[in-house]
Image (cartoon, rainbow, N blue to C red; front, side, top):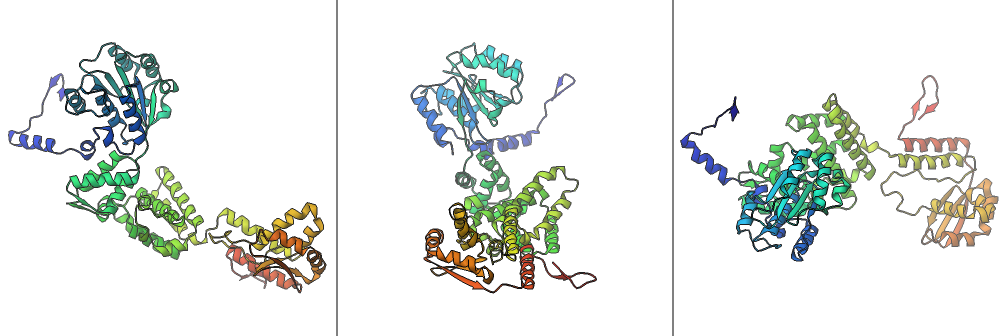
Length: 540
């Protein structure tokens, strides 16, 4: 180190120096050790490799390339492979030998003709001016002088402007390779002068297989569930997956399991999440909060807790939709509690996910993260009573029809609205009848008006049975005259219906209508009958 103009060098005792050097040379992180050396070794970027290898074989070498995509998917690796392909003694070739001096120097990062620049720390226009001066000199020993600029979007606007002319008309021996994770921040004037290659996130299945290979090379027997968990946590980045593998292997002791990962990293397992969801299902807010306290006491962070719950509900939603691929779920479908899955509707699960994601975003600004988590969990204990706005709208529409039925002014259903997630799959006779009424309003308004007086419709085998009040018998007779035409119109909407049958019932008393409305209100709003204070009136 330098202090006061003097240079000091730390001394390692001679008896330890050999051991330190040996340890430093013997260990290499998996991400570095597994870095691809040829296009064929690259994972998940088939379009990129196929296009580049074809271009090299045809001698179509561009003067500027732009590699865009998420972190850890191979952008810098491809840049180095391309540099080796262009400068290999046997090249340009899409299969660099790896043994010639040029290939070895580039692999070690010692080549004078392959210059790697970190765009995040060399952002000024002066840095770019140095490049402009250097490109005037021919390569030292290689065929091409290659500039690899990582995170190029970090350059300043003035630096980009200084670079424009150089990349537009460079000397024939110059190749620029730009890499970025935020291509939208690269000016269009730069992008238009480059061949752009978009790298994609690597699939969980591909990452899992590469992790299996790496674990075997490390002499670690890895459980399939553990590898899937690591692959999912990497979110498409193979480099992140290798880094996480190194971390968990350090405590694996030759065998890596998901239980070990949960214990060491403070991650909730599927069994704990199932137990927690059962408490939600039972609606016991006290037990929910007690269980949350026990989980947090084990060292699980609040952010991790919320993230694990969100992923669990996301997986339940996938299972509701018929998706059971383990690489998407992170677990086997059999690992999830079937009673929990069956007790919740898709709308409830979607609302739970929405609430969890909102909480996760708000935690950074929270005065007390734990209080906010506990408030959310108490609301989760009432998930079974959740009704979505669309369900409330449908219920109110049908309830309105029920109330108007008492005056005989509108057709109304005689069944209580259902909030089942399967609602709408079966053909509703009333819905079919309403469509026919709407179609008849202009051509036969009298018939449409008569049909509206029907206060119930039900399918009985091949018959569509319409119910009229006894006081609306005249309207029923109007419908009866055109029953053949009506049957022809209704049959396509109600498969199996070939006849129309009318029935008449005695008019209900006002008390019966009130009772019916009260029962409907109870079912729609899940209320109960209570006695009003000071009088005998009933209230819902």
